[in-house]
Amino acid sequence: MGKLAIGIILGSTRQGRVSPQVGEWVKSIADKRNDANYEIVDIADFKLPLLGEVDATEQATAWNAKLASLDGFVFIVQEYNHSISASLKNALDYARDAWNNKAAGIVSYGSVGGARAAEHLRGILGELSVADVRVHPALSLFTDFENGTVFKPADLHLTNVNGMLDQVLAWSGALKTLR
Figure 1 (tube, rainbow, N blue to C red):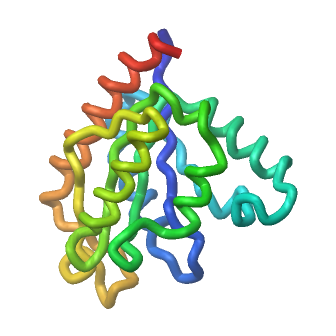
Figure 2: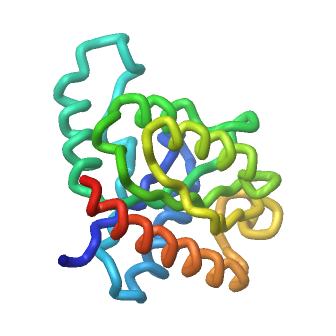
């Protein structure tokens, strides 16, 4: 079996978002491990309209093909109004089978580390047959971001990111046997 393919999904499309900074940080840590193929998957690139509003066959096909090519996921999740972003929920809803029997880790951020968004995401992932892992790096807008816009993570988060990646890889490898 070759290396697993893990997508680091940026969960926001908002102007001025900081999820690309967080995603690149996670990817830089992951790439040093040399134990899987990691890639940033930006939902903004797929230009998914609100589900059911217009014909989005082309966008949905591309989105599902990308997800199908991956063995597991790391979601970069920011807390908006005690939950995940509308754009992430929309992207989750555009696929079904492509999510099934895969594993996911969550890296969240917000005023309370994005914990409420992460918990909402866990419920959605369960319905999509995605096994979310326990280790959860939670980043604070007050201590890990300068002026709320420049990502400056504390070194203590490295342990949790690596622990989460260990679990994502273990579960992704095990679940691959079911697909």
